Length: 231
Image 1: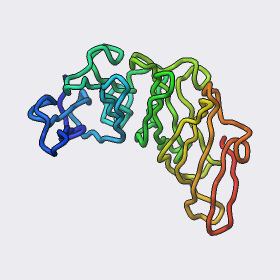
Image 2 (image 1 turned 30 degrees about the horizontal axis):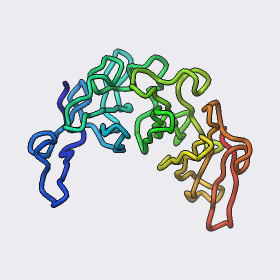
Image 3 (image 1 turned 135 degrees about the vertical axis):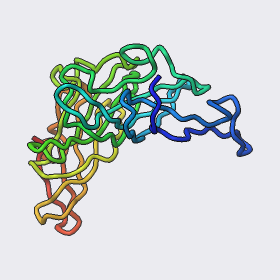
Image 4 (image 1 turned 60 degrees about the horizontal axis):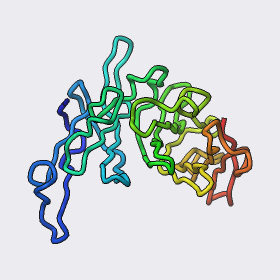
C-alpha cells in the first residue's frame, strides 16, 4: 500500500489509557493513501457498526490533465490493517479522482457519515474559479467500490452554491426521514460570512424546496437573518 503523511499517529488506547497493542504497531499506525507520496490531510473519522474504521480526507493526485487535491478514503479493520474488501480495487483505500466524471475542482473534505442504509456521505468544498466556495455532497456505495449512480442525477454527487456566494461546507446530519442537512458559511449581502444551511432530499436528487427559501437559508446575525437560494 502507498505510504505518506495521511492520518499520522492513528492511535487506539485501552480503557486505562495505555496504547492498545492489538491495534497497528503497538497501538499506533501511520496510514497512507496517496499513490504519489504527496501531503495528505485527515478530515473525518467514523467508527462503523461492524467495528471497522473509516478515515476520510483529501490527498494529492497527478494525471495527464491536472494535479491537485481530491477526496480520499481508507477503511481499516479493527486491528488497524487495511480492509481489503473495501474500495474499487479492494485494497482498503481509494482516491476519488479515479471515478469517471468526478470534478477535479473538489479539493477539501469537511465531514463524513455513514447513512442509515450503509452508504457513505462525504461533504466537502469545490474551488473551481467558476463556482468558488460551492458545497459538494458525494454519496459512495457501502463497499467503496463506486459513487452511487442514483444520486445527483447519475453523477454520484451534488454541488450547492448559495446564489454565487463564496463559502465553505463544515458539517452535516441525516434526519430520521433520510434527508441530509449540510451546513457551513457563505458570504451574505453585507459581505460578511454568515451561517449557511441547505437540506438535500432523501434520494439525493437535489435540495428540498420545503426548507428555508428554495432549499437553503443564510442566517445573518448582523442583519436579523437573510435567505438565499441554492443554485
